Image (tube, rainbow, N blue to C red; front, side, top):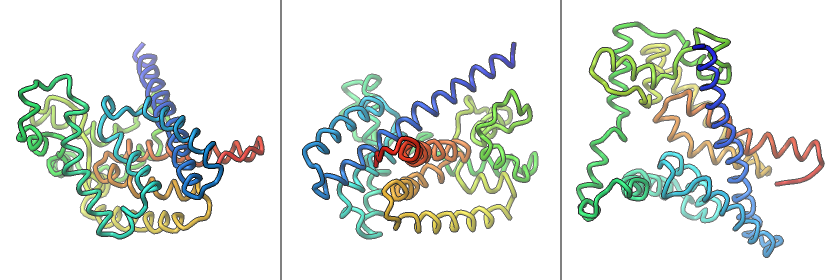
Length: 292
């Protein structure tokens, strides 16, 4: 009975990943593709109609007034990048735009996503916006300290957490010892030892490194991330739009990766690659239909 319930939950999560990441990624890729087509003045009228249709579907799936803010950032930053590349033409411009998004737009979007629970009196108070910086939206430092505390109490996992992230697609019913994602694991540790009242926590990248390999893990994770960034930097200069879009997505998704936890960041990125790259390529190959 318990196993069937676990399987039901995992199938629900798998369905959610497929629907919200794989299929959504195909819609995003379509939006970006027609933006490029219009900028190059290819089939402009048809491209505009298809762009509007794709963008309308995107708004239905990712309505800024309803969707969580962390689910919107990468998507709309990518659209801005392909439609207004001059905003990202230098490191300073890119840094300024992303910093403004995190420090200004992110708190302001609180009113868009929580307007039902905000009273009219609160909506005119500036301190309500600044209160966001004192809440658990910015919990990376405290979760890092929690990961260090966990290692002091239970020791490092010797890569077990990392393995669980890479093999996220294996159901727990077939892998009974499958580790929890690091955020949930630390959340439950905090509930048992430090009066935390929920286990839905993030886990910053450096916290993941400590949980897996201790102090040595900081160097291992940093070096590995540098190699991965260089790999995607090379992909960015590809003439293949699908490959380039994956590289651009990763450059923004890395913010999610740094916030953590690794399992969710990795799973969502794999789902995006399938939607952005694998499925369009398969359709091109099997049906000889060039989608992008």
